[in-house]
Image (cartoon, rainbow, N blue to C red; front, side, top):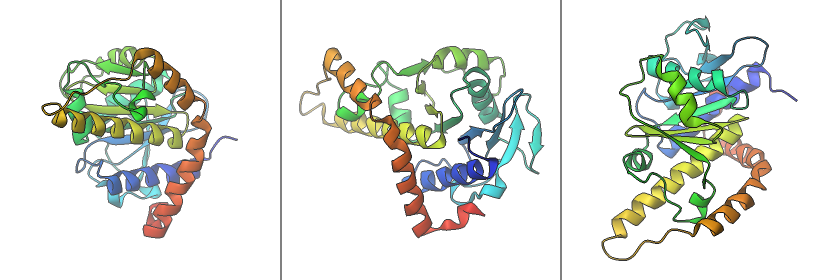
Length: 243
């Protein structure tokens, strides 16, 4: 059953609040979006520019079309955020939700020549499932959208080199879970790099990484269960995201 706009607003606002709680926010920068149901060109919910993640409510979210028009809401959006999110929504009908972050571990791995390494069970989930997009400067140029689409391909995540992380999912629960563990994999890599001067750091062999990645794919339905647990936690802390 397809989620209603009210449900999508609630869940997207929840994802912002949870991101703030987890330390993912970058003041008023970075952005999460979700595509709204309906025929025709995609329209999506995104955060109004100027809001901290911990203050976003369901009613604050604005609706933008892929031509850059705000069709519902009295606020502006981040232009670079529009470029990135509209690119994905235009190309991937299955990527209903798009999450983009500038976390310290994510930006550290985005600065590495070899990108994300398969160092741990968590990073094995992303074996051959992450794209890489070369840095072109702040994403104000709409012509970059086509190149972002090509870099993402059919992957569940994208590392924007010299920039940050991006995850996609059929639902907000999916994209949030992908980002949570992608960021965790980057944290592991950052910690391992700090120990590399003292001990050898080893990658999981490719054949085993592929096997473990398949195991993770078989449990993806559990993301909805995890998301409900996140919502219960947020409700205990501050349910005002629903307003």
